[in-house]
Length: 337
Image 1 (cartoon, rainbow, N blue to C red):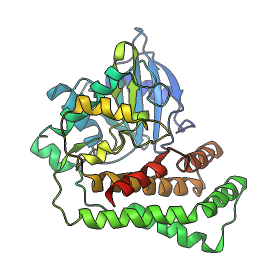
Image 2: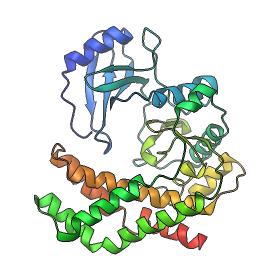
Image 3: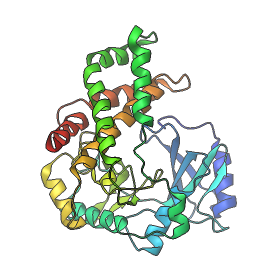
Image 4: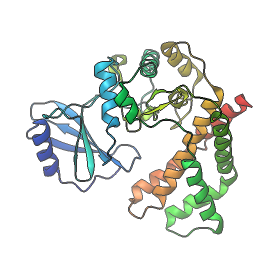
């Protein structure tokens, strides 16, 4: 969220006191990311410690906290940021329509703001390789969704394509968005078609499933001094082919991570692996379809703020820039065909 949720700071202080024993905490809202379902705060405790509080719109799925906790504490994968337990030994709590999770505060910008050093790329590859090689406990693995190449995102984009046939009406932001859509309509159709085509190929193969972060772009990797790094935002873990995560390395999401040497450094740490070129191209197209659908939903959400909708328009345009996600997905497709 770029605008704070309607929760008084006094209510946040009270909940932190009851659940975590943090007294007299000072609350600072952080306008991070484009996820309208999540809010972030920096918590300044009275003893000088600093924490990161994340609020997600409530869900019965606790894998977003259970998976990183297992990877960090049980598997010893240090770069995975794990939630702190409450006084009742819970990894999160619920209130005000959100799931609340408290984390140690990692002091450093994300990968969009600061480029990873070569040692950090190697360390990221090593961490992701360890994640993919992890055997999750049976109950935890059973709680995760499994890749089935759903048509959800593609069909969602098609619904907007049908809706836009006769034009749209709206404010200036909507009309600028629609003008851009019309200009890129043919390429948007190509993205959806190729994603569908590649999914049909992959459905004929029995996939080897591994634990995946599923949103491993530069914004979810924090970089600190001394070549430290941290993998955050485990909102959508899934059991999927390893390419579900590897598509971000060299994939250009956010107009970064698009240099060949960075991918080489990552794979130096990740270790030898046979990459499925079809899966890699599929996931890159599917990510674009997902982002386009979410951008459209946000653009036409009556409750979205003008700031959030302007950010949605910016993200929509950026995907089609040279060396960004659409161009790189086309390159991945050409490598397959």
